[in-house]
Image (tube, rainbow, N blue to C red):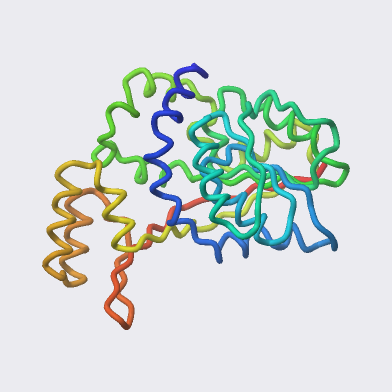
Length: 277
């Protein structure tokens, strides 16, 4: 199962990297800042399942020493490309979340954004996280709520058949935390020995410019072509909303700014679950 999932992330890395600029930096800085500013000083942070590095690079930009870990070699390559463009540098390493090769008591903070559900053995990961955290170190786990995951991963819009293969779908069906609730994640942290575990729900506001939306849809066949044609006609807000409805992106919000620039916001119901060693 692990091998089949690894293949998917390797093949799908560039596809998922198209979401890189939808990351709402202001929102995520607001989410993580309270866990970094409670004590003075630079923190050592491990971002597990870092993907192309959105959260890791944000944390580095806040002045901390950040290591991003991912199973996919291609994800790490993409993260390093973004790292080269960034003013504040992070370190990105290829590795397995369930068997981390870090020394005990290495990090002040561990983050995991939207990656927990992909792990065949999430209990091993949280045990490893507990081991490599310093005393009083914290863990921040971010998940997408099950109903939102179904909307965001609508099979009508996911046409990348070489990524979302039948074998991949079978592997996903076996993942124990595929549709985990915040209460289940909290229980996982409790079982690993974490203290003061608590969960908070929030909307992950993924934001796309028209250019980024077009790039994201370029592999979606008819939907991508229709969107390109729509943009050429300088559409009204109602016309854009009709497009989203037709192609199963109806949960997206359409915005025009004062200069007439089009953008999209996809609020995804999410949760943050925290604990302390």
